[in-house]
Image (cartoon, rainbow, N blue to C red; front, side):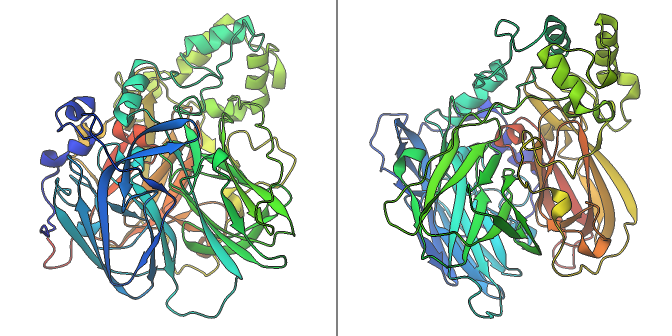
Length: 586
C-alpha cells in the first residue's frame, strides 16, 4: 500500500525517540525468538532508474569474530547504492518486513518535506508489512546517503549510499571511482548499548586516564573528578564494542579496490556510522578534496582529514603503482577500518599501528582563551603550564564558572540535563579535529573549504544562538537544555526565504555533528561570503562555537539534530519549521 504523506501532529508519532520502554513493547523479532534469519551479504549492489524497490528485513551479520542481529536492506549491510541523475524524477518504493515501524531518510537531498522520512515530523513512518512510496524530483548532484530514522535501526545496518550524477555529463574527469562507506558493527542490540550508556557513560571506554597509571597528577585527578569528567572521554562507544567497517567489511576481510598505475581515481567517502568520527588517510598518497557534503569546493590537498558522522567528502587521488592502505582510524584511536587500494590483486601494504589516545585540553572545556597547554599540563601533573598556577581554590573557582547558572544564557533551561556551561567558547573552524592538531602533516580544516562557484547570497536578516547541552554522567543530551520530547510543540521557527545567521555553542566536552534536514547552509569560516562552503552537517568542536548562514527556502517541518545516534535518541534534536507553506501544502 502507499500511505498518504501528511504533516501530522508530532506528539502522536514520537515512537522513534521515546526511549527504552517503548522497545520492550514492540513485537519480539525473529532473531530474539531464536528463529532462523537470513545472513546479510557484505557490501552493496547498485540500483538506478525511475522506480526503485527497497525491502527492509531482519538478518544475521558477521565480521571477524563478531556476529549478531542486523537489519539488512535488499539483503545486504550496507544496503544498495542508489545511483540517480540530476533532473530525473524518482519513485522509491520501500517495504518494511520488520515487526516494528521503520523509515528511510534521504540524507542531504532537497525534496518536499512530506518525503523526508522522519516519523513524527514529516510522515507517520512505515508500519510492519507496509510499503511507502517516496516520489520527488532530483534537484542536485553529488555524494549522499540514506538511513533509517526510526528508533536505533541505523546502528544495526539500515543505511546505504547515494550517488547523483550531474545533469550534464562533460566527459570522464576520472579513470575510475569508488564509494567508501565507513560504519561500525556491534553484536549488541542498540537498545542494550543505550541502556549501558545510561548506566555509565564510560562503559565502553577502556582508555580512561588514572593516577594509578601515572597518567594524571593528584591535583589533576581532583579537578577532573570535581567536574565529573575524564580527559579521555572522547567517544561514547568505541572498539570494545565496535568492529569498524569499510563498505560492510571488517579489517580482516581483505577488502581491496583495484586501479591501474597512472589512473586518476575518485573516492566518494561517506561516514554512515552511528557514533564514530573517523580520521581518514592513505599513507603516501595525497588526498585532494573536491567536494564536501556533495557540493563542489576549490581543490585543497591534504594528507589526512577527519570526517564526522553524516558528512561526505569526495577525494581525487593519483596513487602510485603497488598497494596502499586506506586507514579509517576512530577519533579516539581505539580501532580502525582498513581496506587496500592496489594495482596488483592480492598485494598488501603495511597497516600502521594505532596512534596514542587523544587527551582533552582546556580549549575542549570551553576555556579556549586559556590555551591548550595548560590542561595538558594538569592532566600530566605540571600545573603551571601556559603561565597558569592552579591550586584547589582555583580549581573550585573554575568548576564554579563552568556551572555558574547566573551566567547561563536566558534561552537555556538549566536542570538535571545540563551539567556544564562553557565559560569562554571560541570559534574553532580552524581546528582539524581532536588529536589531529599535533600531527606533522597536512590536515583538512573547515577554514580550507571554499565554494567552487560563488553563492548569490543576501546578508543575514537576524541572528539565532542555540546551545548544545548535556549531562554526560546521566547521559542526557539536548538543545538549550530541553530534550526533544519536551519541545516538539515549540519548534525553531523561520519565515519562508528568511536569511538567518545561526551560531551553535557547544557547552559540552564532546564534538557534535549537527545536521539540518532539507537545507544546505553556508559555513561562516573566514571565506568571503560568496565563497562560504555549503554543507548540511557541521562538526561543533568541544567547548566551542560554529556559525552558519541559512536561507530558509524549503517550506515544511524538518528535523535538526546531533547525528551521533545515541545523542539524538537521548534528546539532542529539535524541529525546524519554515512557514508559510506554499498554497495547497498547508
